[in-house]
Amino acid sequence: MSAELSRLLNALGLLVIGAVLTMAFIDQVWFGELPCPLCILQRAGLIAAGCGLMLNFVFGPKPSHYAIATLGAVASAAISMRQVLLHIVPGTGFYGPAVWGLHLYTWAFLFAVAIVLGCALMLLSDRQFSQMQPVSGRMKGLPLIALLLFFVLTLANVFSTIALCGTGLCPEDPVDYELFQMND
Amino acid sequence: MMSLPFVLFACAIGAAWLRHRSVSVGFWLIGVVTMLILFHIHLTEDLMIQL
Image (cartoon, helix red, strand yellow):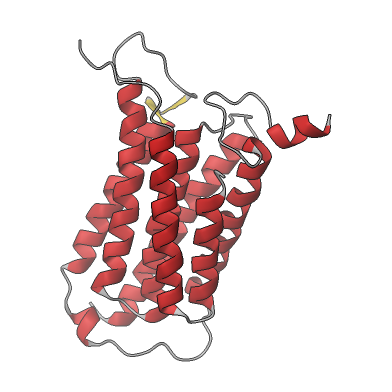
């Protein structure tokens, strides 16, 4: 795999992460499902994983960038697994609606595992590292779109979390935006 | 406080945009540590997973 193809695949991967974060926002804003603290941290884990993919297409593919993506995905998987285990025993309830039979935190766990597998598959190709050359000029096309979308979604999470939780910790089961309650 | 990891990751993205790789990785690292500390704070109840 050439370094250029690797950059393109990393940009595509970041777009997929962006799509997942966008769907989480649609669920929050459109359907009014406010995220719990663990749900917010799962989003942060996905962004941490996305940072590794972003570094790959901004600075060129490196094993350390895949390690960054993997560590972020493992952190996200650990957080979502905690939430899965909280509700795994029948009768212990659940959080949020199910989508295609699985709750969002279960999907988050599966997605984090998919990122780890994707990084492992990408690491199988050594040629992308031997062809390493510094990225010159401005970014354009798909990588630029992926980077801008990723940045906007990260900032959107900053404002959403401040609106939901204020400056402290989030309530375990949020029912309203704390910032807007303070103004009432 | 819960928005802190996102702020740090946004800084990491900004540093990468400005082509400062080590600064970007530094922000990422602090962001992950902050995220894990917040995760630890939210482990408030014991798991009941015996059937």
